[in-house]
Length: 331
Image (cartoon, rainbow, N blue to C red; front, top):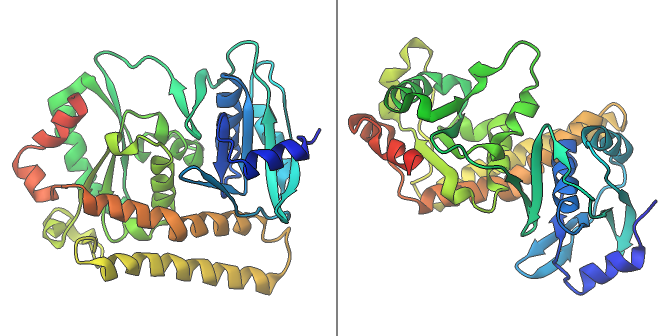
């Protein structure tokens, strides 16, 4: 069944934010499953894709009808365990298409892979007790910066040992899902990003950044090291042509990364139009949406966060035996 059209229009026009999750774009089954689970575990509510919340105002952005929504929602249904009722469909609000999901309150907690989620402030949070003596740390980096990550991981483990569990790609087994691994980022207590020029130009890394900043409390859990050319001595023979991330050289330097991602978006969009076949470009449509999210929102917000925070260079952290990072993890 399709949600009540009048009810959805009333929610948007009257800015009714209670038990509501709005996203300009989000069609990853893993995320939609969490949204439904989180709402079902409270009082129920709505997920509106194609609507954005700007402070207390709901703004309709619209949603592409061409998206293969049935495949996405079939995948969502398979992931949900337990008795849960929800309905979905396309609804026109202010002449623009919105994809609406109405979720009923569940009789008992709904779990996803033995994890419980609950709605909170336009998002969801994990309901679990943190281990008293152990924290989880996700290290986000690009492969060419692995020598730096090896040094940091070795020092953290040396000092904290069993007090922290570190996740990075080397923990993946053959045929494990790389995407599913990335989608667990929000479930970690802390995320450490190793920011280099290459990192800011990798789609997988920027996807991770997008996952991180979805958490409304990400500033409390996001740690970072911004690399410079001084770290080249740790790379050996396989150092990239450029290591330093141009973050602290002014607004124009930061905008170069936005310009880079906008160009990636335009080139992919042009190639898709030349093929002009929806079935043949279905996966590319998803990539286009991800890249659009990167250059319109994620890269700017991430770089602003890095600029605002008082970050330490790798060399300063190295000289202090990474004490500042370790104190933050142990706090």
